[in-house]
Length: 235
Image 1 (cartoon, rainbow, N blue to C red):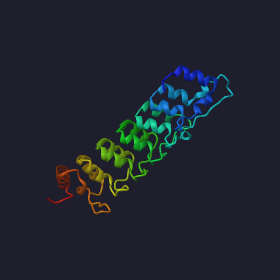
Image 2: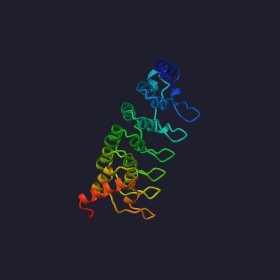
Image 3: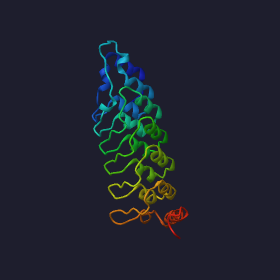
Image 4: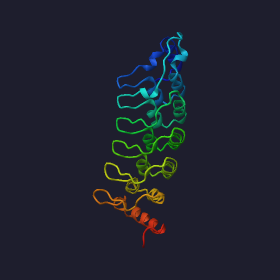
């Protein structure tokens, strides 16, 4: 936690298994190194045996086994903090972490990276690690629901074009990504989703269309004007 790399190396030299120890929340030193975005410490803790005075004291690090009490691995933390160098260091470790592991709230690394608008992380997860865009969290939300809610056109494009994300899946509230975009006032993202094929007539269980849940009349009119321009709606 204090970033004392030298002390960590000396401790591991005597006992590399210290890298496996847990705090009261089930977090390992690697969790903390990722949380404090200390790349050097992450690299040290991924291979603690390299410093062992006794070569027989070999320790293999499997990031997926490092689940804390909330089922977060250090890889979830790296995705949430948005440090691409740490993501790469962990992703290229053997064995490589599973990007689709879910925390206790059902969220994957992709959910966290999208929520933090960490475009480079999302791009790496999708292109290099083939992370799935189809996994729902405990609220039945896809990463695309989050991208729409934060109004990131660039993120939506990446999730749909590269990740082949479904467009019309609804969450526990019956809302599609298009509903979320308009509810948060992102009419430009809403129109982007429609161009990709999102159903602008899709209703919730209460019978509300995306336009019905729009943040205000200004957003509603902007969206309607866009639909007319696309030839999807008559004036």
